[in-house]
Image (cartoon, rainbow, N blue to C red):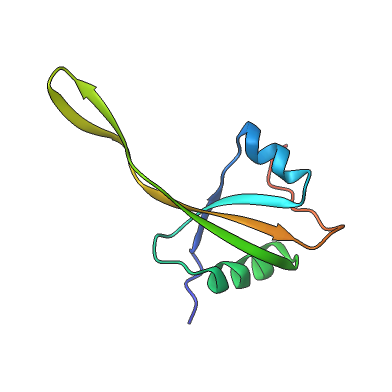
Length: 94
């Protein structure tokens, strides 16, 4: 059974917006999600045909206050999903 909350949220940055013109969309996903699971969820949620899924593990970023290193940004996993040519996903708020 596939977890319906594998895709947490779309990542909207300047770089991901430029990838949208190429038919690639970036999502923050669960840490234990696989490419096949992400592909199935994108197909069922957004009703598009994913061609390819690339996964990137983003390391945590550390801040420094004096001598103490503290974790400021937590680690996460992101997926870049390439969809079939001619299809689009509307992820930007209106």
